[in-house]
Amino acid sequence: MNNITYRTISQLPDTEKPYEKCERFGPEALSDAELLAVLLRTGSEGVNVLDMSRSILASLGSEGIAGLSRMTGEQLRRIRGVGRVKAMQISCAAELSRRIAQADIGYEAELDFNDPKTIAEYYMEDLRHEKQEVMYLLCLSSRGRLLKRELISRGTVNRTAADPREIFVSALSHGAAAIVLMHNHPSGDPTPSEEDIRITARVRRCGQLIGIELLDHIVTGDHRYVSLRMAGLMNCEEGLRNAS
Image (cartoon, rainbow, N blue to C red):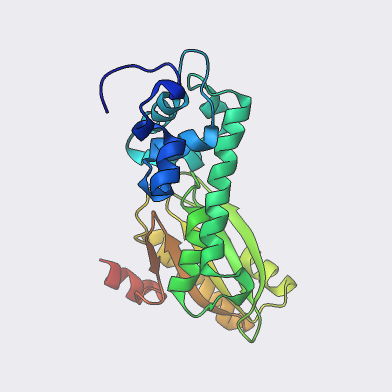
């Protein structure tokens, strides 16, 4: 693009107008800023919508467009030209993208809970936007169908405190025959910590005593995951040896 500053979209050459470009070449031809400009439709006084979109994306730093999902309405409104309505438009677009990502994989009740890849891909989009560690309990029937998904704990930036007693009180209340644990690492690196391995072993042992099997503990990151079962980390002593 040349260095001329355009106050409005109408002053842009046709080849640089997002709507015209989308119509001629399809949405896949648009840059992130151009896609955002189409959604926002209008700029503000003295700033055209394309420049505003570039400013919004620039404010996200190295996260790029993925950072939009982690921005609150208040944070968005601090950006020049973004008011209440535009902040809501951006938040709704981010939420819609998450729901589409989940719908593409399949319906929650139809997931194969013996397949960690299927589970991780379905829930990862939601979990990777969390700024704290959160742990979910998936309660399953004897036929492997989902009975209930429940938030068990919410921790800090790098730790979540999961209590086996709370896990099994919930599992028993929903009549679960088996459970899967899932939590995120906000750092984006899903490598299980020593604490992750220890809590997994504790929950597994408790489950054996009361007859509710822990099928897996899945840790998610940024488009990555680790299944402790697949990695051989379900037993504390053996798991710590394998992780070292």
